[in-house]
Image (tube, rainbow, N blue to C red; front, side, top):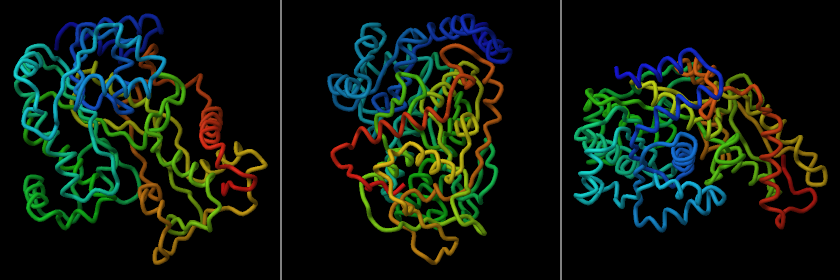
Amino acid sequence: MSTSSQSACKVLSDGVESEQSQANETSWFKDQVVFLTGGTGGLGGCLVYKLALQLQTQQIFVLCRTSKERAIARWKETMPTNVESILATGKIIFIVGDMTRPNYGISDDDLERLWNEATIILNCAANKSFTTNAYEAVTENCLPVLNLAKMASKFSRLVKFIHISTAYVNSFLPDGVVLERSYDPPTCDQCPEEELSRILSEGSTPSTATFAWPGAQAKHLADELLISRYPSLPIMIIRPSFMGPAIQHPYPLYDPTSTNPFSVLTEVYLLDGGGDRVWHTLPGQRSATNIFDEVPIDLVANVILLHTMLQKKGIVHACAQLHVQCTGDEYIARAKRHVPLFLRKKRSCFKFSEDLSIPQCLFAELYRIGTRDWRFDCSRSKHLKEVQGALTLNLDEHSFEEYIEKRMKEIIDRIPLALEPGTSKL
């Protein structure tokens, strides 16, 4: 292990005062050159902010699909008060490419530069749709990852390959504790290579139905094949659960897509006054007693960057255990407290049933993982809560109640013209 690696490990293991921690993080990253995919997405944008402004990373190559102008325009939408400062650092270099093409369609000159200069690969690109079929999901969320790993084998200075997956790659597991490790689908009698080939030739496999949605299967295959095909690469797989708005960075409530279930469902229930919606419960329960796993997006970014410094390999969860573990009931109760009285209706829109023969509502079907009760273990990151500075996971000064209150206010402010007295079904 290099001297800088040993220094990083000592800082992250021992815990230090804020200013010293900030200095050590900066001193390590200032020597790194990052190749980032998915840089205009929510998590990617947060990472760009941290890498460029907080960690003073030496250089950040950002893959963009069409042009740097469109990438910058996207950042102006999502980080309007930060984009000029990010660009002014001179650390951002845009590389045009297409993840569906060999070598991502990157020009020979740019590819040569990546091979010779990049020390870290951060793969944040993904199609997060719940409605794609297995074939589409594999071509968008599995094959490009394997293509990137093949490219990475030629990076002469590579110290870390970080792939952002999802905790729900293990959605075939029963409710309960899920560890930071690989699991095999119970109905799968084929190796990952055979599973991939069958999806590409037939469109699905018998194990497809055991996953919460096809995208989870595609990411599961990507994770397994990364490890089996490229054992010599310094691969770390980060598995977040649902990502909610930021606590602090790039700014409070940063959430470019606003597609996390809490925000989507709250907005829908505020907007319409429709009938009861059925949600399935855990066996023997009459309400949402399961953990609704969500973690702020900037905490996920911090987990990624801290483990990048540690330079270890394997699987790491970034889930509610590092923030606040709340049941669906608790989320509903907290949300209700912050709906203005004039918008409330006396009757709740949630109709819970443990009878699985009763069809669920559209949103319960779309977010089927929201009615399950996995407890994602985050043991590999717990000791990092002692770290202070820009990448802290410490929440001593964070008020979860205020966080929910601000989220509710933002949601309500976003749809004022549609709201009428008595509209809310919360």
